[in-house]
Structures are given as structure tokens and as C-alpha cells.
Image (tube, rainbow, N blue to C red; front, side):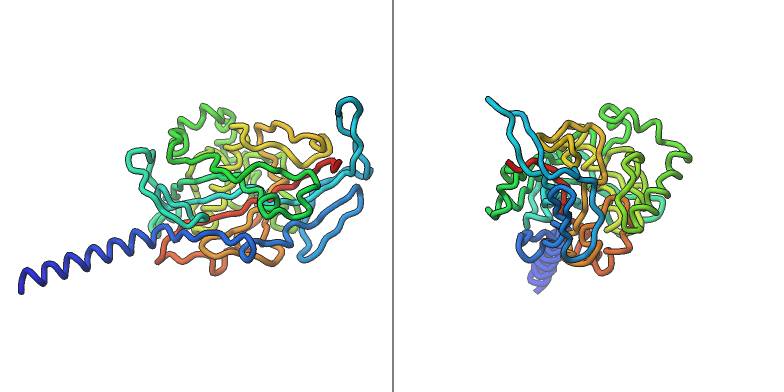
Length: 332
């Protein structure tokens, strides 16, 4: 009888441990039809003409003249100046290594995982939190094969472009200065106080201030560009600032480019500094937000507009984001 009780207790412990481990990640495959904010594709512009359906969202400047000219051989090519917001990138912000929150699976990285996370209920206040991130190329419009794909949108295949688990700089603020030495200039109260202006502008229905490239508005600073959320108020707020840091890291690694300007009509441009105004963040995990003005929130906006009922601590705190990117192009 004693042996049976020990076996039952051991089985119960294994079950509890297994359930706890599975609950940490809360991964689920992203449904590209029902879990995407499809009206975030607006406004769409042709020259100065702008079409805006659904919730009204701010837009970056577009070329006023409807025709554009791109170099070609043997003659330059004439096209239409198009501006559109496209779902372009996918990000997992995970509370443990190997948690692919948007793809629906959890894997053990073992010795290949560098650095530990601290995204749990005790990681609040001044303690901050640490997160691992996965960054995907996710050209959803091209993947669905829609007709609008012909308007010179990105045709890159779906791909896992970067994982923080194998990046030795992601969990170390000192090592991160090797890639972002300018971060030392913003480690002072004056630079951090300037982020209040970015917060006010982005939260009032406008685009963030690109001049304050070191700020994520209401969520704090983008520096150091690591997996740290220095001011952890809640899981949504912390994961959103880590998402913006990931974009800043991708621009520095030249894995992200400037696409929202009249000079990028023919070809996207190298941009080692993030241009915040060309991105929107849509939360997808644990629960997607697919409608409303802040379903595609600009970087820097307060998360109080979309964090309600978006975090369930008892089943884990891994988050997912779909990044919408403004694209100006010359449709030929």
C-alpha cells in the first residue's frame, strides 16, 4: 500500500510539473484569418488620395504626386505612388527559452539557450523583467496570395530571422553596447524625461516622434537594446517595450529597413536607427486584439488602451505581436 501511495504521489507530481511547464508558454498557432486586424491595412493611399476604412489611424506622409519614376533598363519605368500598411513581421516575447508563442509549440533549447528570463509575477516594480524573443519574416499578404500582392509589396518567404536564445548580447546590457554604443548618451534623467513627450504624442492619436528614437513613449526607453523591461508594470507593457527593442536591434543588424518615405518608393533603404512611425504593434498572444483604434497601436502609445484582459498570469505570460509596417512603393 505504501508503495502504491508513493507511486500515486510521484505520478501526481509529474502531472503537475508537466501541466505547469506546458502552461508557462501558452503557445498557440496564429490564425491568419480570424486573429489578424485586417482593417489595420488602412489607410491606403494613391498619391494624395487616401482611403481610410474602419478605425481611423494616423498615417505617415505620402508623395502627393500620383506618378513615380524608378530606374530601369533600358528605360526608366513609370508607376503609381502607393502607400499601404502591411502585416510584415511576427514576434514572440517569451517567458522561457524555446517558447514559440505564435507558432504553437514549445521546445527545449538545452545548453544552446543563453540567459534566463524572469518574466513572472514577482518581476514587477523596480525589479524589471527579462524576456526571450523570436523575430520572423511574415509577409502575410503575399502568403495568402491576394490580388493586392501585385502592388510591389514584400514577397520574402516566411522565415525565422533571429532568435535571442543564441545571441550572447541579448541578455547582457554591457555587451549590447558593442552594437549600440550610442545608448550611453541616453543613460541620464534628461534623455529619459524627454520620453514623456513621445508618450503624450503617440497616445493622443498621432504617430510617435522619430526624433526621440531612444524612446518607447509611455513604456520607457529602448536602451539598452536587450531583453530587459526595466519598468515592469504588467506583462503587456513589458512585452511591448521588448518588441520595440527587438525592432531597434533588427535595424542595427540591417535585418529591418526603412520603407515609409518617398525616397523608398523604388527600393527600401538601409536604416541602422529605427523609424518608429512606420510600425504598429498588434498583440496576438495570449489573446489577439483584432478591432478598434489601438488594435494596431503605434510604438510609444500607452498600453492601457489595449491591455485589458490580455494577460492571464496563472497560465503563463508569453506574448505574441504582429508588426504592421508602412510601405511606400512605386507600383509598376
